Image (cartoon, rainbow, N blue to C red; front, top):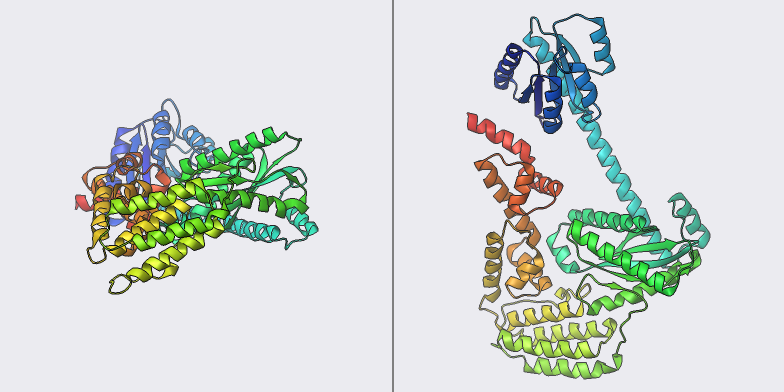
Length: 540
């Protein structure tokens, strides 16, 4: 793909600036790669404008008032190391030539007379170097990403084998030394970070975007741990990450509890702030030595089971666990049987929600362990399907119930929405709700939209709404919103030349880098490249 190059002129002679402007104007008809973006009449003004515009190529006079061209370049080099510099001179001076060589100037052109072929040659040379720099940067970035990905893959495998007890302690110690994990001989505790609304996450992001976000999540967890002491984090599986917090000196139970709560709260806050991802964190008790790692993980894993009865963004420790009433299993089974008998066609949404609220209240009073509760709800889902299957246009498999990563409330809400759709089959109720969601998105496109807010607007459970939207639209909710936001950005750019920050504010995307990634993904160009193309089109 042919690259565009931005150019900037610095010269104290108006005639030379006019001559160069005319040169670039004529050049645009035969070589559309080079675009003049600015000019200055002295070195100080040149520095100010060049740092702001960051041009690819600077063409500058040497002898100028206030600051000469070479001094200007010497100051710019540390800030813009890849910019190419072409010097113009009316003097043949060994001193200037020597300083130009030391400043690593690309070309040294005599400007009296100023010949176009010399400028053409210098610009072509600059383009070749810039292309090579860009290529090496891309290769280096690709290498960095590859190394990072491999590091996380190795860590993931290591910790998974470690917590399963498949790695002897001497091998674990050797690996840890190579990876510079030096803290397992000190006091440490294991913690688990679990993504909330994981079914929605899987529906709304492609596999590659999911991997990118998981690398980012791991990075933020680890940076948060390291900022508060010592530790490490790794992707564990599906919606879970594992981490270790370490400390040198002995702590009281109260101090350990405070440190865990503080770190957990920071992880929850940082992931929501930087990636808009909601997570919960569970900590096991203190341990020491490689031999205790499996036990440390099992403790954290047991604590994390309590997430099933929480909403989201929770921090749990061993000191604050639920007391489970598994002896209430038969009582709850009777309630589910009564619910199944009660459900008939044409039941109203309000009536259904009241029945589900009664079930929820029972479980609020008597929590039954997830391992017992989830099979009961899966059976209810299957029984509702069987009850209304005859003559129903909807086709549903029990395996479609995304029970694995849901909390109890999510599972119950999903069953409620699914049941309502089943008993009213043929009335296209949810097609209307999807249309309402799309209208809500269009109306609030300039805001920072979330799946939860849209689902609440149409009165559906987030997980069920996410699944239903993708099934109806053949596109995830987040993907739909992003596509609409980029279309809005294109409409805005067609009206006027917005800055990147202004565009982000107008379409409700906080992160400029993420906006540029999306824009290029949907259009094939960066916002800057797109605007340049539009300018050329408008000038024809």
